[in-house]
Length: 565
Image 1 (spheres, rainbow, N blue to C red):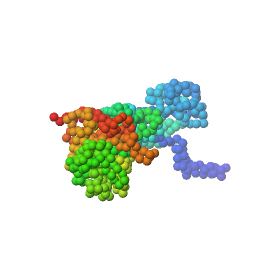
Image 2: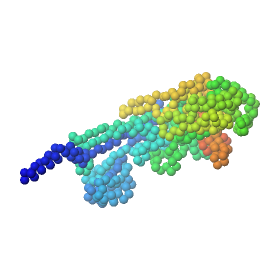
Image 3: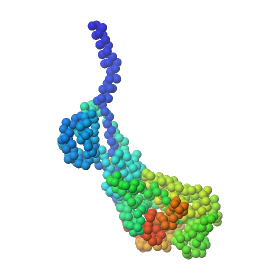
Image 4: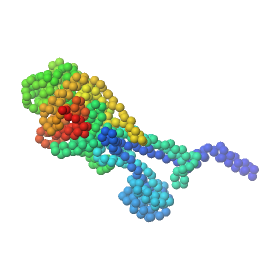
């Protein structure tokens, strides 16, 4: 008996003293659980006039209803009650899960709103093993307005496209954690020495540079403009050239981010102003002229002999318009959109003919001054780099590049470069985040970033502005515009390369219009793109230019810019 007693004492000493920490940790595993406290995702606002903000993205509480089938005593009553309250939110055949007593967690309904959740609580179904998990659902109160700018958060909580994806690290915040003693049902107890809580950090509330009024007007003008030109696809970008702020980005077709799962053509999700490089056509002539002016090779009044064609190697480049012929100045090149004039500027960069040095000079302007072939750095997901081939490319390709063919650029890249060329020569990084709002609605601005301060000289920029004003005034594009303002711009009708026939297709074009408006200095820049217009005329002037004019006239009123007396 003494020996047996000694064995028991030794064993108890081993378990209670030597192994005390081990078994205490094992017990904690059974009764102490860790719970994630989800951080609230930051809200997204747009400007609503000069001093107001409009919520573009909000959070709405939704609930997942779950069951522990081991504690469900009356499956029929529970199922009937949940069907009555949750309706179409219940999971298919959830009754089978309620009857499976081998399981401890079964989802019975998803996406239940707060009113429904309160009704479930009133039925006191927690005694029947029914629980509620609160989550947050992203809500887009303006529906399809600026949809591709905003993006969306999918059903799995993953941000996709736009600001939601591009600024996810700032919007998502940081989850907290609750380490707590639980009861037999796994419910955390509110008291206990073991409870440790790390509070979540809410995501930042973002204020966009987008003005919802400008955005709304632009989307309306794009839709009606496409209908007028019998086109199905197009995009518009509006920027402030004096700070790089994007005031509107619109694409059609579009979608409602509240109903993203109903979209069948996923290309509608993409923001084509940043993600779809194309050959922009003759709008690039403005930037070619900027390079020639800045290098001192041309002046607005400089003339060349326009014969209507120019032969480069074994290719003949032609003008669309056949007159006027003879001595034509550089402003007239923009008025009549002469391809031969743009090629002539490239020849002057090379000393009178197309040379490797001249091609390198144009390449440097495109890539180092206008920053083509690289992302602008805007705070959006999905921006494309575009492509500019280097000076080892053929003379024909570089001749084509002077008027916007053989070069792939996004609308944002072209618009950003154009802003720099006409604002005095300063390239501001295109910006769609204006700043942040804290919980007290105190606004912290994000300062504009100057990426390059000497894109063109101030003198060259002023000359180019005047040339573009004269080009618009001397063309049909100015029809219907308000008088007394300083506007300017350039059309572009680019042929689309067809790989099936191995050349550019005369029947497939993309029309663009790129221009500015204001008074003494440009206060906005608008770029319009229409992909598949089927009306008569060149799509740049017939389809895109009228959309520009409509928006430009509206902007002059909205910004309260007075006309010159």
